[in-house]
Length: 378
Image 1 (cartoon, rainbow, N blue to C red):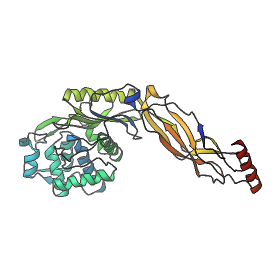
Image 2: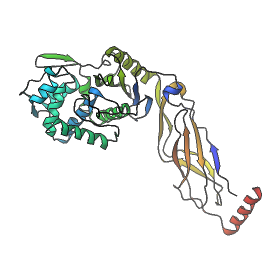
Image 3: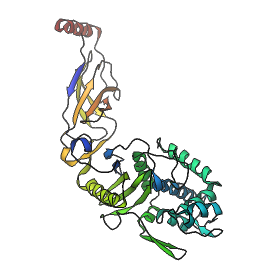
Image 4: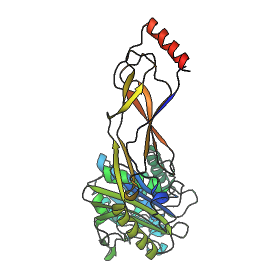
């Protein structure tokens, strides 16, 4: 009788989730550290459930504008008129974040983007939304559709500003993925997030991002705060070839947001790494072949495997080659096994392993003899 076989292949020892194994903690109710290049999550805390994003919403608002600039639908010199509604709901009289646009005036897309990104101007967001889609509601629908097309399944947008709405939400994880897409797809526009101040209508306003000037390499992205959401931030920094993205939300004050953001970003570089576990094509071992002219066949990966985790925990991953039946004939490239990677406190992850060679089936006499031996051995 042919028995399933389990082969243990100790390839690495790496860690489970950062918060469970490394002892790293953060005060933020919602938090993510992401490697910008690979998208690997290095740390997370209550990051997958939707939450109110407040003005961090404006990254998606800017994303639609950047896309329109890139495809030529808009130009930086395109002008939009400031409606009374944009002035009243987003301007000085609203008591909210504002660019201080005057009702009935016009502003270019280039200036409005600075108002959105640097000054967090709600009026600038509404002017762009009305100018591009006819109304803020229609623009918000576009925001949601774009988010879903990007795979940001937790996202629902009901306005362009982040103004509180019971259905306006996105997870911290999806905010990090949005930031990653933003950075990768719009390198020509991304430097706007690092500008320290912008003056409009004679009023100079500083960028509210507390990472700028405090953390080496920090160059973005957006703060947010409402009573419902608490204080939050999407931040990014680059050091050498490494870029990290952090998202925090739910802090109780500006000071708490500042201190938490700085601590999290410093930890992102000093305490976490992305490790290359295996490369596509790596031959990881051999498995037995039943009724094959060759007794074994090599198995190889079809993809690269990278994992992000705390530096202190790099020796905790367990890798196993698992298969239940490798029966001849086998063609090179057939999936014949899986590589199971076990990370403490995380679900196991499996990857297909394919045969490295063709293995022909034994002849009738050889098969009969092999079957007899198998029965004798039990």
